[in-house]
Amino acid sequence: MAMLGIDYGQRRIGIAVAHGGVAVPLTVIDSAGDDIDTERIVSMANEYGVDRIVVGLPRSLDGSEGEQAGRAIAFAEALAKRTDIPVDTCDERLTTVSADRMLREAGTKRSKKRASRDAVAAAIILQTYIDGMKV
Image (cartoon, rainbow, N blue to C red; front, side, top):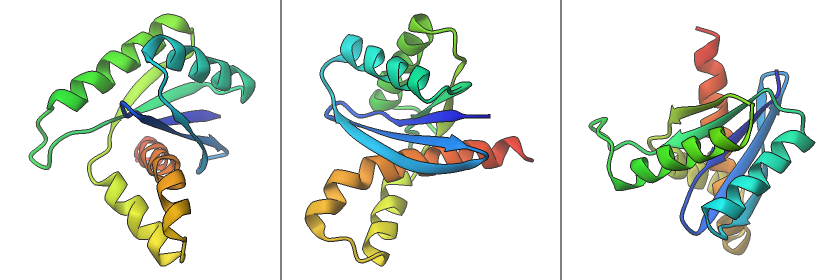
């Protein structure tokens, strides 16, 4: 099953893809507004032939959903209205922290870290979703 993972942010959106159960960072796009962003993501989903789109749901450490979680849910719903591809959400607590740690351990330069962090976070979100399916 092929899937697209999304780390939704108001400024940048990280995107990852998985074929065969392994998520890899794909790209980061600068947000141009939800209507344009959903069109771009649906286009990518079609280009990569994905069967599912997974949007990260930023919960607080205590599990509650704040303002950004509400935005992510609204974005996932907007995506679902634009495509027949199923759209799910996945808890993304601490994915940006994990992405930063992975990039630091890989010796990634600071300028490249910022550019790729959201795509790496999207890959972590997507891999978490995939791993949860196997349980």
